[in-house]
Image (cartoon, rainbow, N blue to C red):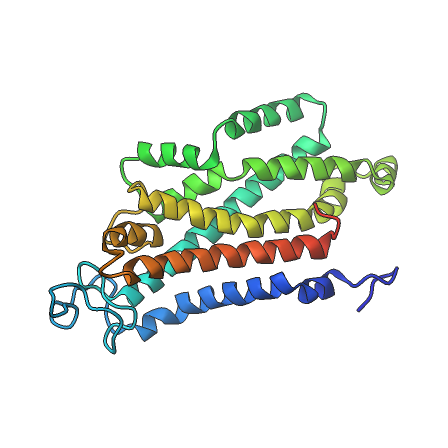
Length: 289
């Protein structure tokens, strides 16, 4: 389908984007694995099997009929733990992205619409202070300061620290839209501020916001994995991809599947969401955000 000047519509451009198609396939594979992976595993992700999980050399068994991805150092099913970790990682990444996108979108729209006023100055000073710290360093500091961490606390930490960059981009886009003629006409016709924001500003910043949100999911997966790898994430025995990497690093030679399985899962998930985000960016605005 074509748009008014002969250019393909965003949906057609997205579907024609090779990277976007690959990204959708990778994301779908990760989601499908999170949903059906536990059904394929024959063990609980927390249960140790001291009969079939131990090899003749007293090491964890490799991929076999009973353990499709082998067993970990405590003789637990690696497939079951990887699938459980996928569920947890996706839940935290998607939920924290929703929080960060909502907060960043609201702050960015208000700051951009009231650019040059005390509202803009206050909100942007908060953003400037937050951006002065590298994202992962800020997340690690907050995570280390918490006495007890759970999926909900990690979600809150990531969501309430990940909105800063989004606010910056949305503010700039809002200022562009605010300067357009149809916004000035709406204001001249007496429409209220909230009506202008909801009818004109928000729909026009929704595209860039969707792109940022998609790429933010990948960032959140990495951040959660880093927290777990460094021991300030969700406490064991709950399986997370980051902690599985940490547990498998000492077995890279004797049991490489313990390192390859979570590492591959993280790479596939992050690559998939990034490719989808790039496809959305090119489809919604081929010239870039």
